[in-house]
Length: 199
Image 1 (cartoon, one colour):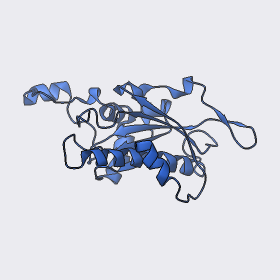
Image 2: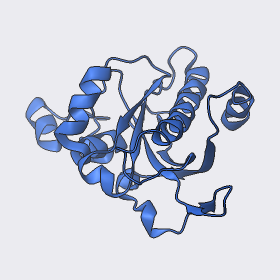
Image 3: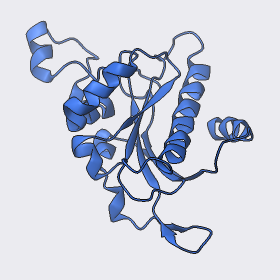
């Protein structure tokens, strides 16, 4: 349903062509370290030249764009309670750790954002080994009002940001590969299935 809704929305005019090459959905936070360059994922442009897609990591985020806030030692000091999520258990926590201060600094300028929306950042620090950009998308909490509709909005916002990244990369040589094509490979977890408990 998400892809059908998004593809319908794509029919609106765009300033330049972009193509979503693939969407990879990962089931664990290990996707932060997924080295997409190890795989042969090329296409040909209109002149027959081999091109590599822009590699984008989708990071489920909170509205403050602060990352997962608890480490196991911090939770123990505060009195552990069931259901607490640690930074290393989430894509958000791992992305913040790998992206370091540069990622945190950029996110601070973009926060806060609403549930169902997404923002685009660079891939800094350890993230830059496997990715060119990051999309930070805020899913709803399971059971909240209209959570299913908001989850679809979140996925659509992430997909839109991915295409925006491809369009921007074609004119911005400061983002990794040179030149970057208008192709995107989005790697995403099951958005909302972690700390937000979406089934």
